[in-house]
Amino acid sequence: MERRLNWTKGIFESSYQLFEGGEIKHTLFFDTWRNEARAISQQSTYFFKSNGFMNSSIQLFDDKNNLIAMINYQPWQSKAIVSLTSGEVYHWAFTNNWHSKWAITDLKAKHVNYDSDLSSGTISANTDDEIMLLIGLYIREYFNKIIYLIFFILFVTIVCGNGF
Image (cartoon, rainbow, N blue to C red; front, side, top):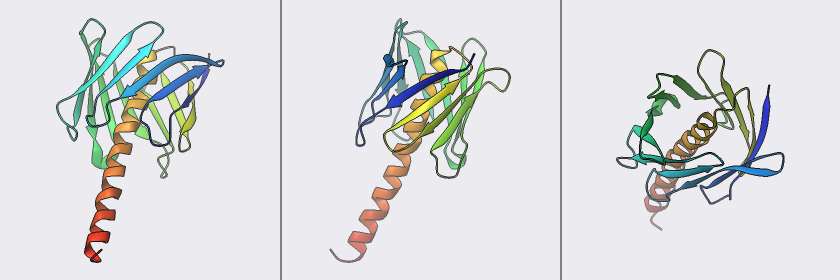
């Protein structure tokens, strides 16, 4: 069964809301200055914790502070591998050059596809796995922060290099 969800976020915000049938199903709140987030769903609460902004791995905890997953980034390839403590492994990657489409899959039966514009998008999934839904958006935000940082550095370099 294919699920269809919609998500929204503010243009200059990092928090996401996921809707299914017009009802909020999940919310993902990001810490602005750290690469951490809190996800709230109808079943549980999850915490994404980092050891630093540019750290290449993130830990995912449930509401009882049990480690449930590790996210390891491959930033130069714009990919990530998610290893759940249950033994499942997910692969995350952008699926187009504009970074407006991406997917997370277990390379077997489960897959979630994301499509976006600047502040909203759609999700199609063949699974009810809420962790996959949330991790897919979390990783996208991680890569967006890197892209924004690069553009900021380029902007400052250009402005300062021209003597302004």
